[in-house]
Image (cartoon, rainbow, N blue to C red; front, side, top):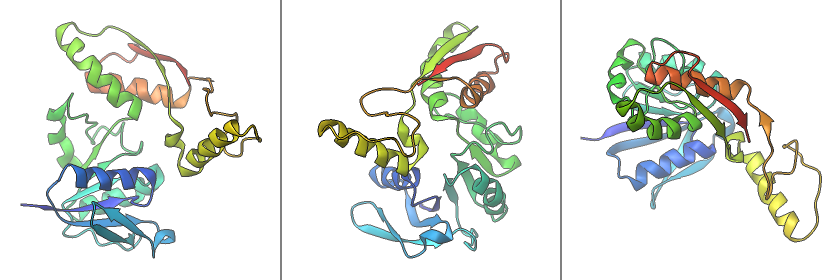
Length: 230
């Protein structure tokens, strides 16, 4: 038995990677749909070695008959379309920040709290945490099982890919510029990032990571503190 799977945000970096991973892992897909904003109409995206999918517009996409929606279009877009997809009968697995702290939406890392998936029936949506949270809780889970975690202090190191394709392209350009000694001012970044790191104070994203870890492990809110991001 296969599934009808819609990837929303299919033309973005994450959406393309989702399609690649589905193909590489031979996920049982009967039919795949690439869905994105109307700006992407006319584009095509690869699915596996042989298939190419025509991009369909999210605004009028019919989710009836879709079993699973893998969603990474940005939080505002998810807020608007995910309930519509769930109402049509699809299970929405959302990669954005929109539903992570919604009490009626399970926040799931399969290797850590797979039992939480059963709660998806409340809204038909499953959220996954921030990328820093995911890798951290996978490492923390066996320690937490042996001796309950009391406190975690973390420094995170973020890749520029989280900021989108334009910033990734700028990193590529900066890297090339360093080799030919032709440096220029950053366009999308506040500082040169090639061959270095930019340190910033832990603010909103770090608070979100702290809340997510506390949520997954049912810890008191003061147990996790992220002191610095880079």
